[in-house]
Amino acid sequence: MMWSWIPGNWSLIWQLTWENAKLGVLPALFGLVISLPLGIMAARWRWFSPPVLTVVTVLYAIPSLALFIALIPAFGLTDTTVVIALTVFALCVILPNVVAGLRAVPDPVRQAATAMGYGPLRRLVTVELPLAVPVIIAGLRVGVVSSISLASLGQLIGVSSLGYLFIDGLQRDFPTEIYIGLVLIIVLALVCDLILVGIRRALTPWQPRRERRGRAVLVRSVAA
Amino acid sequence: MITFEAVTKRYPDGTVAVDALDLEVPAGKTMVLVGPSGCGKTTTLRMVNRLIEPTEGRILLDGRDIRHQDPARLRRGIGYVIQQTGLFPHRTVEDNIATVPVLNGWPRAKARARARELLTLIGLDPALARRYPYQLSGGQQQRIGVARALAADPPVLLMDEPFSAVDPVVRASLQDELISLQTELHKTIVLVTHDIEEAIKVGDLVALYRPHGKIAQLGTPERLLGAPVDDYVAGFVGFDRGIRRLSFFTAAGLALSTGPVFSADTTVAKAQASAEPWILVAGDGGPRGWIPSVTLGGYPGDTPLGQLPAERVGHTFTAGTDSLRAALDAAVLSPAGLAVGVDDAGQVAGVVTFDQLRAAIQAADAADSAGAQAAGQLGAAP
View 1 (cartoon, each protein chain N blue to C red):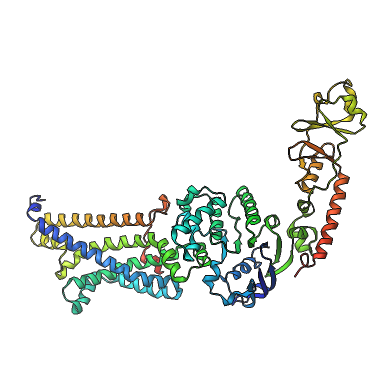
View 2 (view 1 turned 135 degrees about the vertical axis):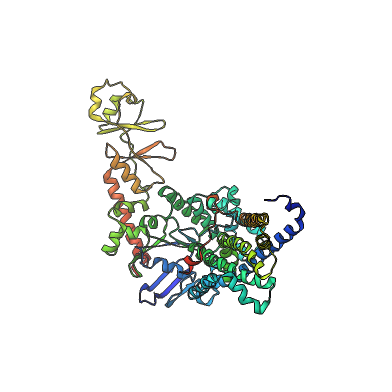
């Protein structure tokens, strides 16, 4: 470990961290945006959910590198390729949580909302989605953390991220870079995770303390 | 007024939940639908706000067919209370209560002010307004559910097993509160329960269902207890229905005798002279106890009755306000076989005998049957 390497490379480290953060957060956000309508449809229409969740499981099984390669002919060696690929993986994690979160809305609550005179859309937006927030955010947390970690693979097709430090460190037989890259990815993931926990707390003051840990649903268990 | 005209609900698998139901819920009255689970009482209730649509027949609300009304609009005019409360966990108490006013387009501040008003009406501390449902007890949640249903002042209130999930003590107080709310608000209430005691306690009218969606008997609670139409109804209302029915007859008409009543400073000799078999000693704070006359001979004639050992009075009944059931209870528990009536201040008003009670019960019974025949519809099965 060569500590002196750090001060001399501040701007490189900072730039790579920023690139990696973008490549982690954007796919999770896109994944969320795509998951919401699909998840709402899957929660509403029973028949729609098995095919959607099966597709999600299959997509999740594709090796990330293979997906990069498949996207290169269309999008080249660009950020777009990496973001699209990671969006697919984030989607795979988030979508089942949207479905599970909406399905977990207690039946009496849904029934009461209908009986009070809510139309279906207003009920969805003002009752069901807010109640699904803890589970959806649990999925988002997994999505963000896995995107941040997978983003480093983008370096293999030349898209800049903290992955650069791994490859460069390996090629130059310089472990310091590898260690720094590893620590920064973990720190980045933890920071993003903490931000999401903060957002969830702010959005759900109505949750009893002891239940405040929304748990992510595993892809397979929901699809099965 | 809610009117069911030949309403049937049949499910695709052939199950008949409600079978050609004709039922009229008079405006301002509490109609209790009671019966075993699966008898169709909840289905009946949910057809009123179109959570379930009937297969045949029609339902009129104040003469208008509910099918011709927009469901969401219709529902905002019908309060709905369910066993599991269905409170919105993500909204504060005040915002839960304000739900329907907000849906009706009220500004939020005005709706919240209304919510606080309702908290007071249902006997909860307005300081609870900012709490979330998980911070409340079961009884409080159920009260909030009732407040939410009343928020937009709907003329009709549907209640599906509203008090079944709380413990018996809380349930009894919620029932009492509903009764007193109803004397103030005069809503048209349809309440579903499987508990015949609850039905008899809160209902102006009770519809007792048979399995598979037929009404076995429809009538006032008194009529159900007094004249069950068949063994099914008799079995459902219970073995002690004769006694329980006396709750509906007032004890106000009983002629109270003061013959055996003596104050505590009366002498033994004077009490003996009355030739009553039992002597009731009355003090300033009400009855003190019964003394059998046969024991009086063992004391000097100038002894005040207050110094003699006496047997406990047991229960008393309040002459002006209690029911014949309370009077009968007092007689049964009295060592003298005489029921002690007290006035509103608790002072002894007099005593009644079993024979008097029997006569009063028979008279009340005859008046009740005559009244029911005159009224015609209430005691009859539909």
